Image (cartoon, rainbow, N blue to C red):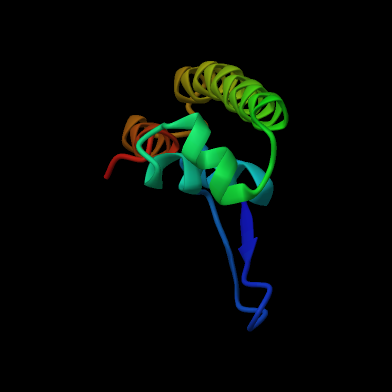
Length: 106
């Protein structure tokens, strides 16, 4: 994986994984931050974003679908990691580290 800072162009490349929340689109990340700041109150979230409740509901549904897709991707990746360990291409420790990173754990 490779990540790059859009401001300073610094990049990092290697065998690591970002947690699901860090892999959301910028729009979904922004919505998630506001949603959390409002304690999950959709009415207040809609007011903060200056959008209607139905528009917010659509955006929240889209964010949830995006998150579910990331969960499914991580399940596929977990299977791939297990196969890599079984085939001797990856150590169990390295696979465990990548799995923890994907779940936002240390």
